[in-house]
Image (cartoon, rainbow, N blue to C red; front, side, top):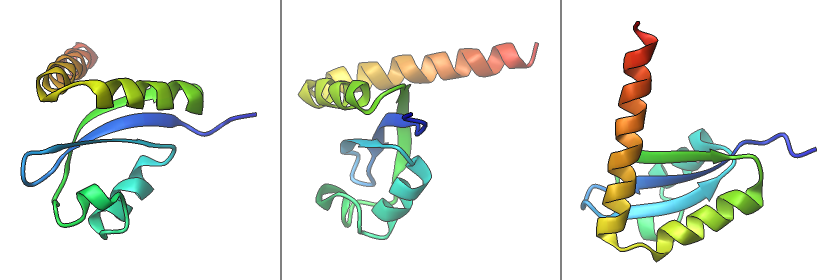
Length: 97
């Protein structure tokens, strides 16, 4: 029944701060952030860089992960981002083989 893609994302703002959010339509959500209609926190902090994305089958799972990430300090978030980027790069490398 629930056919939407649920995801948690982290944005690196222009001031180098990190914003964690949930969406079921990342493209639309990023557009809202860029237009200043997204989260209050991101207003005036653009441009943004997506530095982390994790997809989930249900909204509940995604919201739980968003909460867990928001409990992390900056160092914990940076470790999460670094590990995710490493995984993305490894996957990209294996596609070329």
